Image 1 (cartoon, one colour):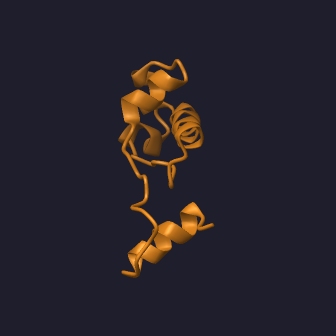
Image 2: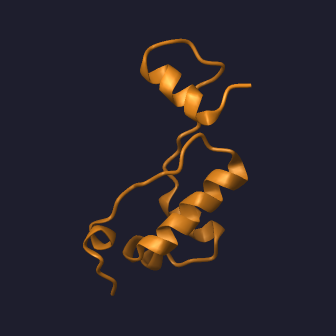
Length: 78
């Protein structure tokens, strides 16, 4: 059985894979999944990470989305 990592890396080098990798951008939906407000998810990296990991685990995505937010990058919260 091919792993998610193998699937993505194989696709990146142009070889055939069993299926396209599941790599959705989930942002607000992932926040809803863990019961967080989107503002908190966008402003606090630890909440964003928890939400993205929860979505990836629950739906067997082939990656954990890291759609960066400038507030998280700068360590700001409001």
